[in-house]
Amino acid sequence: MGKVLNITNPNPNQQQQQQQLEQGQQQQQTEKQPNGDVESTVKRRHATTVLEACVHLFKGSVGAGLFAMGDCFKNGGLFGSTIMLPIIAIMCVHCERLLINGSLVAVSKTPGAIFYDYPETVEKCFEYGPRPLRCMSRAMKLIVEMFLCVTQFGFCAIYFVFITENLYQVLQQNGIDISMSMVMLITLLPAMIPSLMTNLKYISPVSMVANFALLFGLIATLTIAFSEGPMPSITERSYFTGGTQLSLFFGTALFSYEGIALVLPLRNSMGDPAKFTHRFGVLNVTMFFITAIFIFTGFVSYLRWGDYVEGSITLNLEVEEVMSQVVKIVAALGVFFGYPIQFFVMMKILWPPVKRGYSCAQKYPITVQVMLRFIMVMLTFGVALVVPQLSLFISLIGAFCSTSLAFVIPVLIDFVIRTQEPKGLGTLIYLKNIAILIIAVLGIVTGTYQSIVEIVNQFK
Image (cartoon, rainbow, N blue to C red; front, side):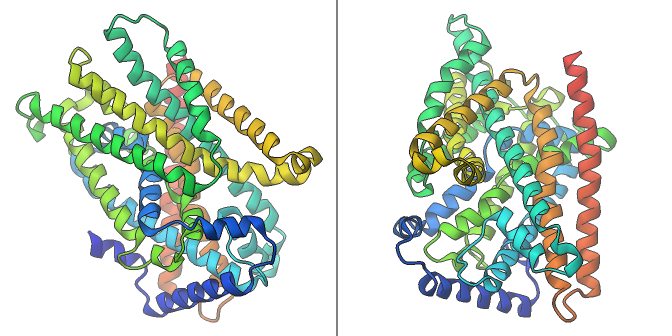
């Protein structure tokens, strides 16, 4: 699998070109650094290490989606999901590399630039692209910012739902009879505290705790699944599915690989950004382990609980058992501590235009930013209150926003860049990009439609 992920960047010349761009970016960081730039000085002082980048990428890609793998395999089938998940992973890694390459190209063409995040990368690539497309640069940036905000906002809201559903079961079992809305309200105040952190370096300890809690919850859940008696025969489960179920699988799978919004911020925050895309660097190694964990979790969960598997496999555990209650609490804590890093990406997009557009934000930046963060936490809380089914909203967000960000936009960036290079858009590259776009559009249309239909039926 490690070798398979490496085929996402098969062209040695392209790889050499990317390494040269990365070296040029590192030189820019030392030569073009503006004097007196307090924010840049802080970023250098708090550079993220390789281990911390792996932790962040793992946590950014493994949240509530990890525990939804049982539902994912139910919609994709035992063998169908096992085959398609690695394919989706390879496509994700490849498109993430396209995004990184686009960012490096944009930085190399912009005097004084040090790095660009996702929206700025899209804007600059179109700005330096073919003349007819340059007028679209601002619009493309706004589209990406909107998709990123909607995606991260949805992640945060779903995190509230996941935490609440697990804690609610435990409280009910122990005779504490309060409504699910009240349980969600109890989780609101603790969510505020880590959401005030504004630097990835400071979020690292929280993210590390979240990773350990998630892994413990996952291992304990699967241990309980194995200890409940002999596993059902695989003949009792669907091998492959089609139609509406397959579209829901696609949405859930894309939601689970939710880390593309963090790729550029993480790479840009590293002391040595080139280590992010090495053959055995942060991106390949982390995505390999994530995919392996997803496949194992989904296969075991669907094999054990079949069509009764819930949107979160922790909800399938017998709440009467003390160990099951501990697992639900720990898993809820793991997802809870992942809230700040998803919230971080959303605020990184929302804060700059607010700061530029309002004089009070420039005069009192800390106060205004704290108020904005408070409002956004309250909004995610409010949306979570009206979510009827966790699994359906996971599929909807994954099918519409995550697919666009993970596949469509990076491929468009690659098209724009290559049209500016002599013989940059060869036949194989053209066909490969078109194939990715076709798969993405089919996933968006079918997944979004089916998710909306199922959600409307739930409200009825």
